[in-house]
Amino acid sequence: MTQLTDVVVIGGGQAGLAAGYHLRRLGIEHVILDAQTAPGGAWQHTWSSLRLFSPAAYSSLPGRLMPVQAGEVYPDAAHVVEYLADYEKRYELPVQHGAWVESVQRDGPFLRVHADSGDWRTRAVISATGTWTRPFLPAVPGRREYRGRQLHTVQYRSPSEFAGQRVVVVGGGNSGAQIAADLAHAGIDLTWVTQRPPRYLADDIDGRALFDAATARRRALDEGHTDTRGVASLGDIVAVPPVRAARDAGLLGTRPMFARLTATGVEWADSTRAEADTVIWCTGFRPALAHFASLRLRGTGGHIATEGTRAVDEPRLHLLGYGDWTGPASATLIGVGRPARDAAREIDGLLAR
Ligand code: FAD
Image 1: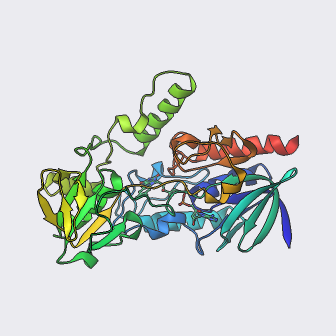
Image 2: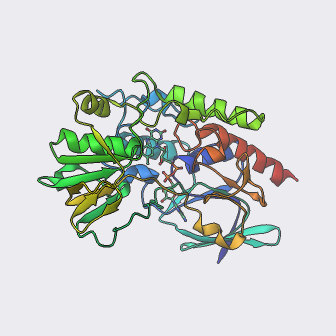
Image 3: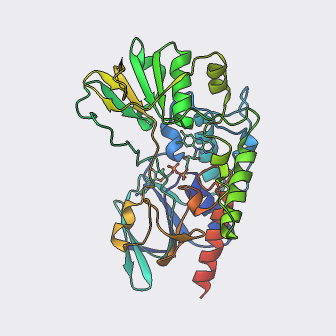
């Protein structure tokens, strides 16, 4: 049986909830379909020592400040999950958990959303499916020959499972730095490999400064000025306390990217080698957009072409979260509120026509 609603939001992480909040305020009928069986989006699956790079007050969705976590300036992932679960309940957001959307198709004046829980006919779609379900691993020679264990950021939980091992961590972003610090503090034999020397943001940079930099970048691009590079101009790694402590203790030395994997480890271009029981790839993510394959939307670099949050080739579709290409700092807790509001308002206008 096909159900009808004005808007289907795909994804019930922070971006989907922010969309729901604004749709609700405008009195727009909608449903939020989320593949996870419980609230919290990707935050449910991160490693236990992960710390937000901003204090709670700067990690809040529209309408409700994130409460401070007792004893912590930078909340952990469990605290975010709790906050999102409470947010979903507080605003009575119509989230259907355990609903995986397989495809979205055009159907005359409607869009048809095909989920494993049933079909929906709708006048607009907001996609907020994040990136966590699409881990990216670079093509490095020897990956198939290597006989040790390889995992991506998404599979990392805690250092305890690597006790007594030699571990290579690849990637100079926040995930790489936090996981390297986690392993280093636990005394694991660590080789941290980065494409360029790690660039730490100043220790006093918090989420507010990151949001401001992302906003200034978007404004500059919109006004046709030179790309300020936004957050990237400040550095790659936020020095959250565990990273700062490991760095200051001299535990976070790095080596440049290796040339290949061997059967038992990694090898650099100058033929030096490091043996490794495990390689952890902290090499980023791509947007989870496979459900739009049949719409054949234009885009580059795995993105869909957008104006603001609206897809250029399909005005009934909005994209939220994912990265700066869907709004300044749209893939952060503090940044997603504004693009969510803009998407809801545009959809309100569309429904009124
Ligand atoms: P997600 O949380 O991934 O939610 C998407 C939801 O959609 C999920 O529940 C998923 O299961 C569901 N879904 C996916 N595909 C489908 C489908 N086809 N059908 C139905 N449901 C689907 N941001 C900050 O603000 N502060 C930080 O400190 C911070 N630290 C970060 C640290 C790491 C390691 C990472 C990876 C990110 C961090 N971020 C941080 C960025 C960002 O806030 C998170 O990535 C956040 O989870 C993004 O939220 P989202 O709602 O866009 O996506």
